[in-house]
Amino acid sequence: MSEYFITIKIEPLEEGGYLATSDELQGLVAQGRTVAEAMEIAQDVAKKIIESCIEHGDPLPMGIKSKDKIPSSLEIPVQVEV
Image (cartoon, rainbow, N blue to C red):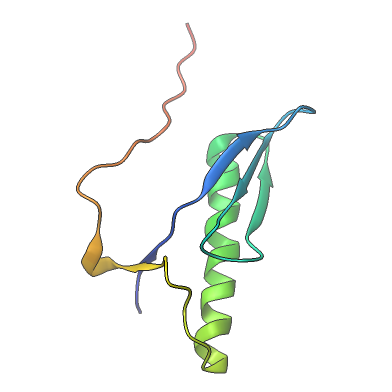
């Protein structure tokens, strides 16, 4: 099993919820009620796209990073109710 990293963009939707997309993986569009849900769905969609590329012998998009190139830091959302 291999592990890959992609960059996704999260945008709030006017009607509520969040939209996750990626410039690196064409076709990755995920919508969720929360940021966490949109990210989880985006992971599932990305997995299917990457698996399809591998199965069909297609090259992986350039921006995809293997686990060898893990970023040393990243931002994560933390929801707090006050």
